[in-house]
Picture (cartoon, rainbow, N blue to C red):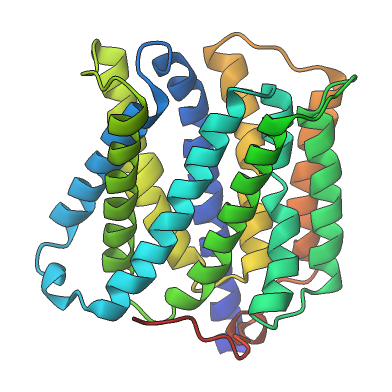
Length: 306
């Protein structure tokens, strides 16, 4: 009984850590929105993830000696998924509304249970499925506006949601097998390289100007990238992929709240209802918290190591 209480307490800490990550991501949404008026998207992300890589390198200078093919392969695959998610969303935003993008990106909470069953051979609990449905309905109230039209941008953002879902699913396995600092280091390095290559190929790379741009890069690189993805990796050692996705869906709630505080945006009754439903979706799973058995059921999935 005492061991079970310890496990539940650790799961609770993991959930709170992920909520803290969504707070940071919600804050950076407003900062990035203003910064992109002066800096191109791929260029901004190149600076952001380049800094994130340097932070992880400084945090584990001796650990770099333990890099091997398996860690490089795992981190590289996760990095490609992250690069795809950020790139699909960035390009898609140029061709669709922010409301559409916010809703469709949040659909990773739907993809994760499906992929968890297909790839990890782990069937979600009923409470998890109910929480997903409630969260998606809330996301619709928060993000979608009347008179919606679908377009190519929506499909790109949908690809973002699917790619990020794959990141969560593969992270579920890799965090059990590899050093978290090294795994995060490789991810940040791969994303930095790919974003830099994209910036050189598609944009006129420029130097950030002004304290606001540099501050945003610093906050995003240190807190919203290196630290955030390290925390996500640690949390997924203790939480199932579905539970992780339901907690991470709090990001649009915090992005709206910080938008109100920093950008003077306003929230309608639909928005408040949506925020409430997303929070309810996250709390529904507390009706039956995850146990060690729920998280340790890893199925028969064995990703490639080389």
